Image (cartoon, rainbow, N blue to C red; front, side):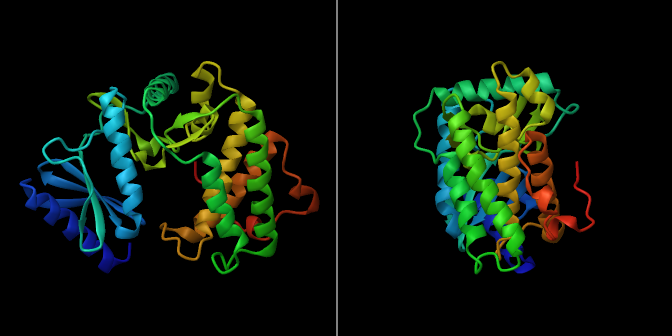
Length: 299
């Protein structure tokens, strides 16, 4: 967020918790992007503070958390000392969660696969209206195909992303063995290693699709430990995930830190993922102008 908006978001989170009877002597910014995550101490509450235009997303996330907690899913829980809902203050939507201190080493691939399978099993037990992964693709396509929404995207990269998003979506829809509720983005940043074991966070990304769509967000070795996974489909979903990521970075209104680097990184990751699937035909015509700039991808 912009510094002024960040100050307002921090104060909104602090004031909301304090009015609910939670002791807040200090606020630590854990994450800052289009919404912020705050650790409130000493009450040890995690406040997720989003602009009010994201109210529906925040309410959806709280509902997902409530239902998954009821079936003992491996997810972070809402703060039990307050009503499990979204609070609105000063044009911000605020949800309050239990804070979990990270512990232990990096989660091993086999353990990662196990907790993801348990999460999918829990998702099978709840009845929830959620968007399909193709809705997320449609949103990315709207950004790519509208020059006013993505004015700095070159024509070559615009065509490349549009074709990739459309083509992979069709291939995945045909090749998948069926859809179910998914986490949506179970990457390592959304899986905490806690004293209670690994727990998923950021539940607003819940959607429907093949389990391979989730596995594509996890470290590569995880898929090898997930029984019945289609590894070719995982590679296609990974390429699609990078194409979606790249499309969002080119939005005029994107606020992710280090956006210029991530724009280039995203396009290079898409090409690399398509190469692995044997689907990148742009190399025969020369790499896109943006993708040739000298920035190494992270990871």
